[in-house]
Length: 151
Image (cartoon, rainbow, N blue to C red):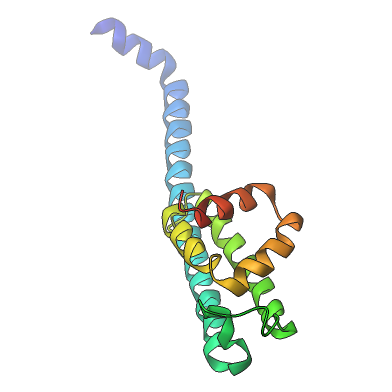
C-alpha cells in the first residue's frame, strides 16, 4: 500500500490528466450518440412529412388517380406528363428512404422493401421505373428489383 501512495504522490498530476481525458472522451461519446439518435428521429420525421405531402397529392389531384390503380391500361391511355412528373418525385422519395434505412435509421429496409414491392408492381410506376432505372444508383436499382420480386 505504501508503494501505491508514493506512486500517487509522484504522479498525481498525470493521473488527474488521464482521468480528465478519459472523462472527456466518455462525455463526447455520449453526446455523439445522443446527437445521432436525435438526427435519426429528425430524419424520420422529415421523411414522414414528405411522405404525407407526396401521397396527399395523389388524393388531391384527380389527374394522378391512375398512379395507384392496379388495373391501369397503359395501351388504352398512356402515361401522362403529370403522372410521370409525380412518379419522378415518388422515386426520389423512395431513394431517400432507402438511403436513410441503409444508415440504420428508424426506418428499416424490410418496411421499405414491402412498400417498394407494392408500389413498383403497379402498372404506371412499373413503366416509369423501367424507363428511368438506368439513370439511378445501381445499388438502389438492385434493391427495388429485389423488392419487386419479393426477395
